[in-house]
Image 1: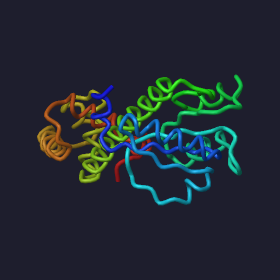
Image 2: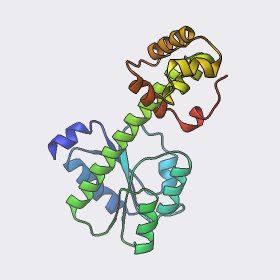
Image 3: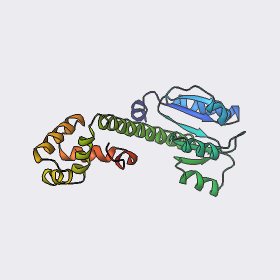
Length: 216
C-alpha cells in the first residue's frame, strides 16, 4: 500500500456528497492513507470551484441536490473531462450501476462500504488518471512535433507510416527518390524518431482528426 501511495504523488481526491458527516468521514479515511481531499455538497459546488490541476479521482454520490451523480458523469464526459469516478451511494440499484460502469466508472459501491474496498477503488482511479494524463502528454508532444513539419514532410510521413518504401513514395508524390530521402531525414529529426517503427508509433499517436486531414 505505501508503495502505491508514494507513486501517486500529490493526488487529490474530490468527494461530492450532500451529507456533511459522510464528507468528513471520507476525508478522514483518505487522510489515513496519505491522500488529500476536497469535499463538496453538490456537483455545482465542485464546478464553481477553482481547483489545482492534479491527478486524482472523484468519489461521487448518485443522489445529489441539483445535478445527479449520473448526470454529472455525463456532463464531465461531454466536456472532455475523463476524471475517473468511484460512485458511493446508499440508493443504488443494478440499472444505475450498469449505466455508471458502461459510462466508464471505476466502481459502483453501496453504503455502508468496507474502508479497504473504497480505498482500493480510489487508488485504481488515481492510477487510471495518472496513466491518462501521461498518454495525453505524449499525444500533445507528438502533435507539437507534427506541426513543425512542412506539408511535404507530412505527406512523406503519411506514406512511410503506411508502409511505403522510398521508391514508391517518390512515384506517388512525383518527386525524386533523393528528395524523399531528404524529407524523410528531416521529418525523423523533427519527430525525434530513430527508426521506421518510431515513425509509425508517432503517426498512430496523432489524433484521428489530424491523421485524416490532408497536408496543406
